[in-house]
Length: 281
Image 1: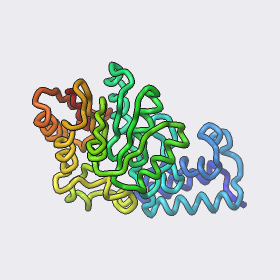
Image 2: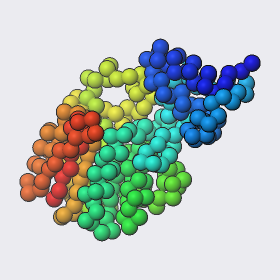
Image 3: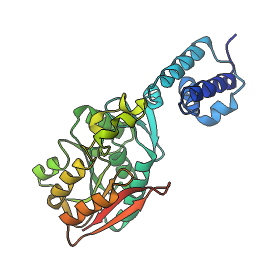
């Protein structure tokens, strides 16, 4: 006889904990296997799984225990209340990036019909969300990875966001087209190379290194961005970037040097870690 849903969830929680993974991942997998939302799953806890459902659930839990990100198993991640397709070509969107979007939306309220660029768009989480939340905006999404752009375009289509995609490195596609923007946002690669060994296998083995590592000190991309920003950011414009904790002062200094008359602001995330730098020019 196969298990009831609550029994399978209990097993998964225990098994994942024993393997050093998040015990709550079982719920995400179960919702995916049953193709229901959380409320429906909870209402059905005493239902018996079919043999096929139980086998699928167990296989995915075993794969997650061995390092496969749960988002890759179910193929999606939630971001700012929307469901985004994710895969090995893109970074899995993080809650910290939702905070970057929140602050950008708040700070951008004063700009009507803004031109916005998302640099290193990955899954398109920032670009698509900005367009969805600011329908009056013209939004460009840029990435050096064509595979990432394909995933981002898929997300834009499924979420009905009219985003324009440009292939290229950092701000170069904007400079080449002579495009100036009111808001520039980015969650660039910022992990120092020497921290590679300390990362979870879920991250280092399954997420694109192109989107993770930012050179020896993690600041390479910010240096390039700071050098290119004066060519694309309009007077009165805003740039906002996510950083690693402890990198904000260095990034703010780079932006301040690029715009001596500008103003920089460091913002902590919900956990009190310095994670965002905003520049006002």
